[in-house]
Amino acid sequence: QQSLYSGGKQEVLHRLLLPPWQRVLWKPQPYQDNHTDATFLDELITNANFSEYDFWRIVRDSVAVSQHCAATVVFLAMFCLTNYRGVRLRWMLLMDLLLGAAGCGAMLSTACYKQWSESGVPTLTAFLVQEARKVTIVSTLSALSTYLRICFLFLTAIYTLSPILRTLTQTISHDTVAAMTICFLSLHLCSHDYKFVNGIDKPFGGSVSLNASMFVSVLLTSRSASNLHVALIMCCAVEIFALAPRVFRQVRLTSETAFCMCAFVLFALALFLLQTLNTLLAFLFATVIFGITFVAPLTFMYIQRFKNHINGPWDEAVPTNRHDKMGR
Image 1 (cartoon, rainbow, N blue to C red):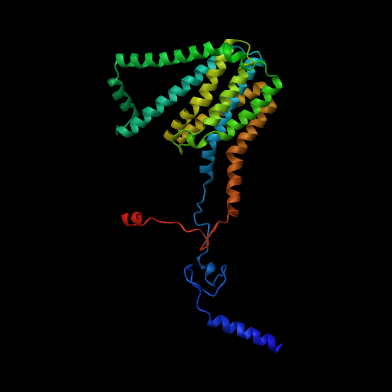
Image 2: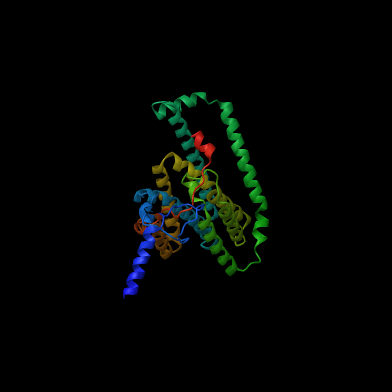
């Protein structure tokens, strides 16, 4: 016992005689490489960059996901109704025309509203009257002829390629087409650029998503009964998967209320079309949309309580440029 006591006393004296530890690498010190002093945890910071989330803010951001899911369901429902339920093609033609007109109207409305907000005119009516006086018949006919020419060339190209698209994947079995449709639509929904729709990313980064949706459209055209049906399917696919995200982005940047209203109308349309196909599918779709819009944000806010990100002296050093520091 006396030897143990003397050994402990010598260890205490040895520690007292040691020089204080310094956090430097160039100086030799009588300490281990992993030595930490008593002030090691004084600089501990927990959740330094934590920002509190608002539930309704997350719900509004999740509307972009629900909206795109509804648009995808509209496309699939229109294909199934016209191809398997005997719905006439004129209804799909009417749907394509309504989607195109709604998109053009939304783009024109948002552009007009943006110009009015930047012009300083007190009322929107006065701004419209002021702009209407600047419009001439020649400029209107010129713009209209340009748009009609573009639409005519687009529709002509699609209808010309319809026989090729119809027979491109015709040799693939129905089961393989169904499995590939499910897989590539899942890829499309998972890789879609929802930040672009919410106005966060300026360039559209959903090239993989767009290619997957176009591939699904080509797969489904092989099960069409006529070339006109192929053309209508491809027009609907271009409007929903290629043009709709840009329209939704403009509406979102202009008014969040209008964006939510557009999403509700699209959801109601998808629910109505699914109801005509199968009631159970409509119920499952409504449940999924409710989960994405409300349950997922609640879950996200709940798990934020358990977030514990720590920072301290063990973090990697962030180099700073001396010239940049002096310039500031």
